[in-house]
Picture 1 (cartoon, rainbow, N blue to C red):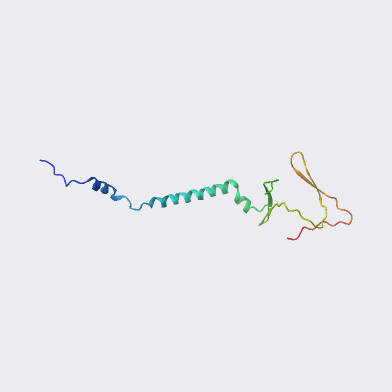
Picture 2: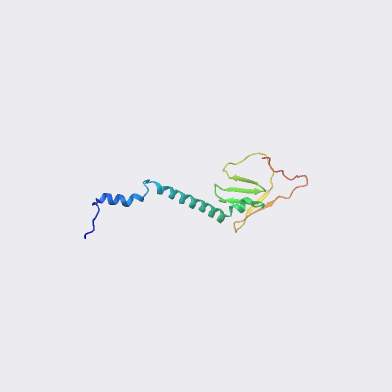
Length: 132
């Protein structure tokens, strides 16, 4: 006895039956790529914070001064005193006005700069810092 076959299916019908379980949304995979990219970005930010010790700088109670790009035109001085962080940018502007000589600075052969304050005279008072 011969086994009876069902009606013949065309190639398109067989292909359609194979793809019946596949989602019809062509952009469905893009959402997964976005999720992976977000996880990667967060991991990269955490790694940078850990490597650069940013939390230690921001959360510590120690006072410190950081000089960025020393000797260049875009030099910055960042100081932290307690919870206050101050950022000073250098400019090419020269200032004029009345003042008092406070000392002299020397650059050593090693590149270090040493500040030597002037000895106060008999009637001199210590200079007060400028008001902000």
